[in-house]
Each structure stands twice: as C-alpha cells, then as structure tokens.
Amino acid sequence: MADPELEAIRQRRMQELMAQHGVGNQQNPDQQKAQEDAKIEADEGRQMMLSQILSSEARERLARIALVKPDKARGVEDVLLRAAQMGQVVEKVSEERLISLLEQINTQTTKQTKVTIQRRRSFLDDDD
Image (cartoon, rainbow, N blue to C red; front, side):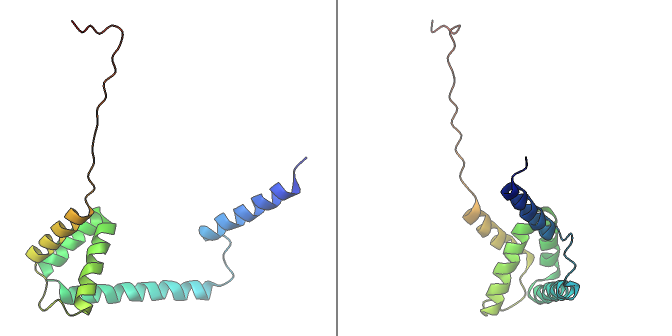
C-alpha cells in the first residue's frame, strides 16, 4: 500500500537529517578535522586581536556579555575588529569606550514596541 514516491521522499529526508546531525557522515573525517582546526585557529586569532585592542577591564566586560548574549558580544567584537583593521583604533579600547559603543549599538538595534489594549464590552457592563 505504500507509495514508492513517498518512500523515496522519506529516505531522502532521513538522509538529510542524518547529514545535518553528523550521523553516518564518516566518508571524510580528514576534511571535518581540517574544518574544525581552521575554525579553532580563526577563533584563536580573533581572540588574540581582541586582546591587543581591548584593555583588560573591557575584555572582562565583553566576556560577561558573551555569557548572557553571545550574538550581541559577537557583533561588538566584529565592530571592534573592523575598526581596528581600518586604523580607527589608535589606543586600547577602555571599558568606558566599550560601554559607549554598547549604548550606541543598543539604540540602533532597539525595536520600538507598541502595546494597544482593546477592552471588550460585555452584556453585563452598564454604562450608567
């Protein structure tokens, strides 16, 4: 009773899911190892550049932010690294300057939310 097309679709989907989760993906462990090594090396280089740009207090603050909001910390790191590559960072970034940068990013990314409350009138309410 099973439709052969449906079975083929299920098999493809199962293979896709297994590939995403790394199950059954043993054909090229050397390539995976090379990708992991490259990622680790890039992250180490990134951290080394940040240690040269940031003061110790600013680095600590950024590490605390990364614990709570890793995506926000990554964005701040990207902004700092771009500024350093363009030559805009002359001296080490202090904690105060990092705070002002964070405030600027917060004002740019803060979304305005508007809440509208609509009350329902029931039959039991009197307008007396």
